[in-house]
Image (cartoon, rainbow, N blue to C red; front, side, top):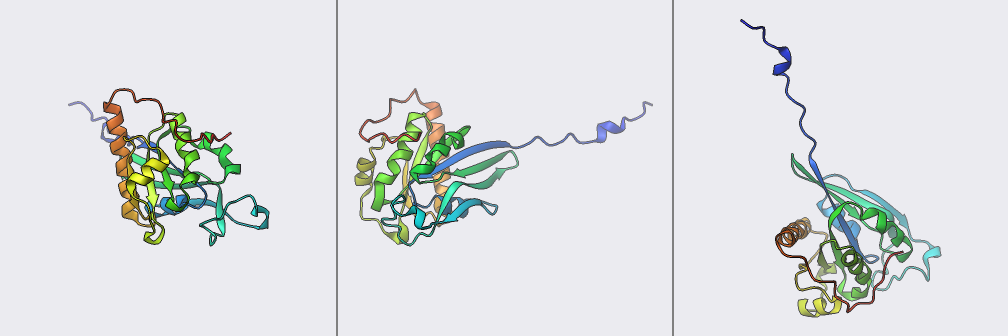
Length: 212
């Protein structure tokens, strides 16, 4: 009788899970850090600093005058979907002076979420143009601060000049369920695009605010 090979009883090492990178963008104070924190399974990595008098005249606090901190590099969170799949969330800084970081953060991103505030929709134009110019699929999250929303979905779409195929959800980014719905909508959008012919060029209705 052949002698059993002890190595045959040793399990092969488990394969590392596939990693998916999603970028969360938007203007200053729209809720990017809050969204990452609401859905991440681990304590998010945050790079927030207190606003000081040096930001007076530089950061526009209209509509967010109670905000006293700001992201200066990135927010990072993680969601384990299954043993085979892990989603990494990267939140971008919102102020224009930190836009140069977007070009590094976007590398390897499968898709994105743009957060918009109906009180300051123009602050989301740069993020939308950024994703469109790079052909990166995204969904739009309309963050209703304390349930505040005075615009209809049709008005918001028109103001943002969104392609009809771009999903748009309205909710509160503080709620984990809304964050989950956004991620699921992005996955569905990616699957739809993968099954469809090449998309048409990006809309030309907004002024392009390209991060340098």
